[in-house]
Length: 257
Image 1 (tube, helix red, strand yellow):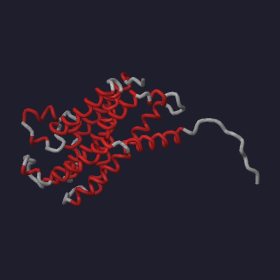
Image 2 (cartoon, helix red, strand yellow; image 1 turned 90 degrees about the horizontal axis):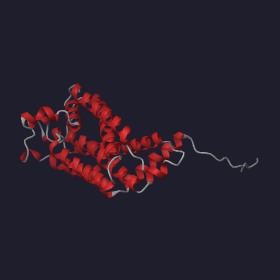
Image 3 (cartoon, one colour; image 1 turned 90 degrees about the vertical axis):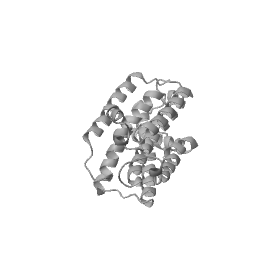
Image 4 (cartoon, one colour; image 1 turned 30 degrees about the horizontal axis):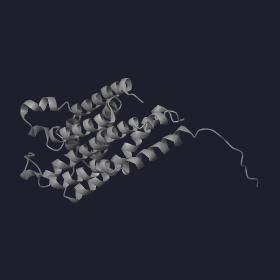
């Protein structure tokens, strides 16, 4: 048997490069305490506090945990695919990370696929942990396997919409402005985006425009499917429109340097 030590210079396959990029993006995200706070700690605190929320906020008929749990799942999708992604990408632009990655054999679309793969991995952990804690707190989801199937669909649509918005912000603003905007939007949507409080609990005059918000569409859709009903078509359309419009705007305005 002969040992072949002949050099074989050249880039790795695209699949291996993207897998390595996904792993690196995930490690960087998990090492960031602020992003872990947004991704898991805050949703878990709101989930636990939500069991007593009926004493503070009128959530409407039904058990508080059954109303709060789908909203917390929507909040987790928002935090990882918008706030965390926008902040991370904004500072990568500032420190020239994206510029240097552009000089590697990894194609630009591969970089975006790597970021999307990292977000989906984090969301998988988020949703498993939050669903387990919600069930432990007494959540009684209906709809069986179909409801969890729709959870996957809504997660993909929500990630596409919020992820495109995150890259739109991070690709056009400075890092400090991206940090401020991403956190401000997160807080505003958490309070007034029909995430935790159902849409029909808001003033009647505000309900129609709020149905156009991606957070309202996502949380309302999840509440409906976990109540055992068919998903509202309007919520799917709203998320698709947000994903399409934000993707086009990002493709036209994103600055890599």
